[in-house]
Amino acid sequence: MADTLSPDHEDFLDVDAELAEQERDIRDAVREFAKDRLAPHVGDWFEHGRLPARELAVEFGKLGVFGMHLDGYGCAGTTATAYAVACRELEAVDSGLRSFVSVQGSLAMKAIHRWGSEDHRAEWLPRMAAGEAIGCFGLTEPDAGSDPGSMRTRARRDGTDWILDGTKMWITNGSVADVAVVWAQTGDGVRGFVVPTDTPGFSAPEIEHKLSLRASVTSELVLDGVRLPDSAAFPEVRGLRGPLTCLNEARFGILAGVVGAARTCYLAARDYTLVREQFGRPLAAFQLTQRKLADMVVEVNRASLLALQVSRLSDTGRLHHNHVSVGKLANVRAALDVARSARTLLGANGISLEYPVMRHMANLETVLTYEGTEEMHALSIGQAVTGIPAFR
Image (cartoon, rainbow, N blue to C red; front, top):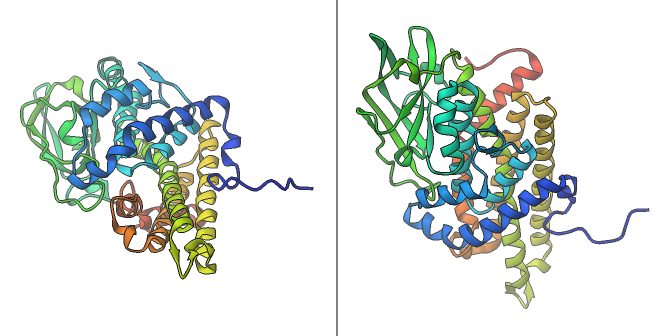
């Protein structure tokens, strides 16, 4: 007969009981750091549209979360599940903070680790893992989002050098980066380049007036006759396989991270409705309120289980990019539903930065469309189950 103990309202299905001891230790360390160092300041960072990126980079480096799922070069070499849990605890505070970490580790560092030369790895990865150098990933362009193959950035030969010209858009960490991984069209297909950001012709104007992901640095990359030696190019990879491999890593971090955002919104709504009284009773005593809270619990725990399963598939070498598409599509949608429902339960207070809900809700509108829109992931899944591509 089942135990009669009541479930934990924070982890209703006891999903974290499936974590290994090291994974729980990492969860606890990142959660404590996020609570003590990040949560007290994130509302101010969001309101003023700024992030102390350099300062936080060093602290994240000491925490060991940059490239934590990579091996060697100062990286921790953890399981994918441990990385997922770290992303969850960071995004429980803010999507912009998880994005800072995942762009550094899953995009810039992953690209150098997987596709770079040994010189690239030795020069950049130890410094990036320690937070002494910040990286960004230049793929998206003003006219090339879901269709990266239509990018206009070009790299042409000039003797033994490369000359890069073009513009990238919506680049996290761009204006604070020390190194940019830039993808460009060449006569030999799309290739990746390691670009130190102090190279003449490189600039990264910051994008302002954002209404979402305000606690995050977002920039344009402008490459105006950027001259690079031949050694700056990734030596082997050609075509979109290079950047898409990295994007799959970043999407994995997203599908895990948004579980944290959803959990925070649910807990904020639960705590608020237990103390807020109307008609002489706590809001939590009304049937319609309890229905919303029940739906939130279901969605948070379903998303948590999905993230755990995708993590285990990665750890056992069985992960397919369509698995990641299922997770990104389902979990972001679930997190948005939870945030929107939580906002209604907080009433007018739901739009205040004194509470985390509206901030998460605004952030998740961006998370829904970056690293592959909902539509693109749906089409990817549709192709997987029918065998028929419907992208064009």
